[in-house]
Length: 78
Image (cartoon, rainbow, N blue to C red):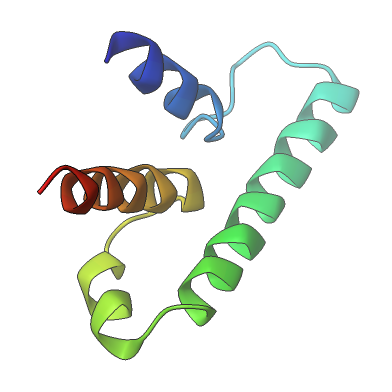
């Protein structure tokens, strides 16, 4: 479980920009954040209205997908 959590956290950009960061790293970080927003939009657009309401407060697509995989595993085991 810990490895799943750490992997999931690495897929989401950091909330705050580090104090000492190069221009290239800042550009990369901004692109990562922009891509994260786009990915969330794509995932949300592919869901039913009910599922969109369920995940409307989830910030990152990686977190949504993690929870969907857990739901799927739960349904398969029952």
